[in-house]
Image (tube, rainbow over the protein chains, first blue to last red):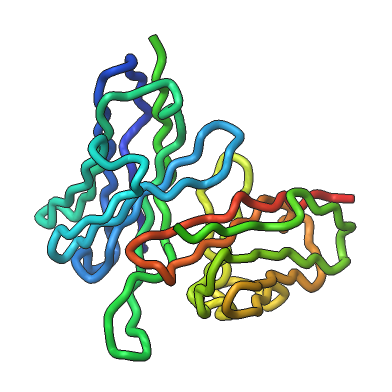
Length: 127
Length: 108
């Protein structure tokens, strides 16, 4: 079945980096994009960025620019999200999600909704 | 940045009744609007995309409507498993996405 399986929970100290993985199965990896979304304890969903699994193009949320890097390994159908210079307010559950593409009225391919989600990875930043 | 505002923050409804959740965009997002359901300890689940199309496996009691800046998610007859937090999301500004802050649907 179609699924995204993420790596396990992480505990990091302030200033460190974390790299979360997201392994896809059950579909053609390069035919979809991957977005990353995080959720701080008791808070709502925050979109972090998107990567094309086809060509590696990325787009990041402005507030994370310079601290986040998203990559993919098509040989293993795995996406990665690395966040650097961790702070306490980066403590959150991090989700990967599959982005379904569609064609708009002008015939351009665009990203749409997030139809499959990983189970989430808890990242705790604490001294 | 397109800001998505959901109302109310919390909605109390009795099982079997209808629930209506609202989402407003700070500028037009056409029909590029999705709704997600999230239960405690679980990942979000896609309910509606394109403002009104149900995702695979979503029961017919869930319906979405609206376009431009005003959107509604309606649950026609609430079941016990429907009590959760609901988020709207715009993707008109792709590849930049934004979520609303969520509406918690609780049992009255």
